[in-house]
Length: 631
Image (cartoon, rainbow, N blue to C red; front, side, top):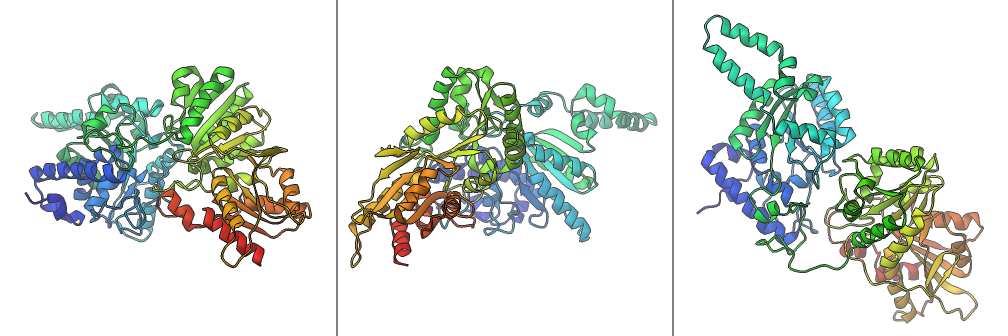
């Protein structure tokens, strides 16, 4: 049988398909996703849940003339397929498709930032721009999950959208989850809507029934519609949206193409702001995902068995696993320690702590700003909060870290998962900003562990600080072998000592955290010498705490001819820049090379490949050191 999916090369190809063919297309899309994403890795569960919704969106709206804006674009794989991108061979790998919408790939992709709760603000801005330009025949559609609606920015946008008469359609993809089950008052409200007879359905019945009543039927219906505020409070508690001035349609079965399409056409015809509430099931059509109660196969690793949804190979212990186990022990030792997460309980490793100490864990939803300031309040109340978020998401609450937490000298520990180059998730998920933006925060202290032992040790040290915020950041993936220190000099771990035949070492390499292994590789290469070049002796140190700069580093630099700093973070304003400034302040003038990530957005690829390309592996560090000493 000819593949329907292969015949769809652009959205208007959907117009010729009947209902039976649409059902068949949906089935083919699910088969395609299961087969391909199981091989490459990526977000599987969210995309299986939006197949019919995406088909309906592209049948009703004319993308890119009508703007489709996806909030948290990991649910946009189906959108990619329907807009001509069906080569998933290298999904999330260099040279292949991004795991999120990407403007470079298609004119149908508008927003490629995969941070949640932003789509409605984009939609508001686009709709206003169309109005100013006189493009009144265009529609803007924001597709947002109810998990993203827990973010305050979404409600700022809703407030502005409701204040105008712009043709913005807001599709709430309600699967009861963000990454894990969605929590909070809004989630409870949507849960009530799921289980209550819909007001629109009641009005549709009333209009039909009363139309058969001569003379008075129409008048009664209009009166009924006029008192909808009181009526809807009885029939369905959807008033929250309509009180904002937003027309509400739903709830709609998100796996019924006809029902979704009908609702979207009504919303499109309305001409003003409308919310379409669509119920979907994450992992729909794939039994392993539906049986995965915790994750519903939100994201699968490369080389996953499509029959079972389980990986063919078991990976090693992750950085997150190490933190998770240590938090359990800290929770046992310290009754004042509590955990906070922003809708990422499992990904950041706080789920075990939550199971053991359910009264000491707070999932605030996708609300990092609230998390930081709430933590400050918890610290004032006599507790020590541990706020665990992805490093890339800390960007969202910088002001709260600065003006709420640090200004008040609050004893709060921020644990940053997925710090540094993260790999396949691409530009918006690389955690390469935190060591730079946090340098300007007075009093804040930052630790970067190099291995599992240091994760355990530095988290312990961090929660002992009660007069300032502390940060501990670590990488994504499996933690490497432990690296023993030769000695500790005033808090700085010396991992390798340079031979000093002339009383002064050639080179000091300061390596932040997990790049210590690459720094040691570089030192070994330098000691061997290259063809036609003499050997270079390097001392390799791990500061452990990179902010503030340890005075011991200044003295170590004084004992060497040159300094190279290495960090898995942006070069601008990061650890290397701080060390260089400290050397100048102490009148220690040594040639210094700062190695890190350039001020550019890094595309998706495997982490080792990106680090190698940036010169942050052993050979790259060695080459930079040779050039520095030569010059």
